[in-house]
Amino acid sequence: MTCNEIRELMPDLAAGLGSMTPELNTHIQSCDGCAGKLAELQQTMALLDEWQSPEPSPYFDVRLRARLREEMAKANQVWFRWIRKPALALALSVLLVMSVTLLHLRTHTKEFAGNEPPMVLTVEPGTAVGDLQALDKNNELYSDFDVLDDLQVQADVNANP
Image (cartoon, rainbow, N blue to C red):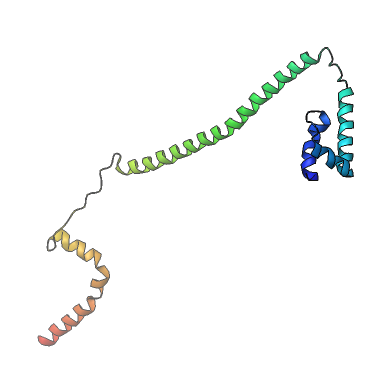
């Protein structure tokens, strides 16, 4: 056996839970490191066997129960704080979405609320209204035709002396 395998078995050997096989016994007698480790562990286990635990105070249970109640109350408050933040964020998100939706609907309903949609009148060209609309749209173009009118008047004057 190797030293690593022996070291894995040493806590059981020192506590008296395992039995010494001839192979273990020969290795421990031949290896000073393993023999020293086993002796140290056996001393530690002997000290632990002699140790007496102190008696708890008579009010230990009362104080323990009071402390447990306090800790449970704190745990309930921490849980409430933990859930409160996401709940608040969710409520604010829903409120924001609702307000944007209402604002959007309000602007679209204002366009048609009380007002009828604008009527589009189609006017046929050649009528008086159609001619006025055409003159209004093409005002700049027709303002340059004054030069042509002056040329026409001069042509008429020259033709009729």
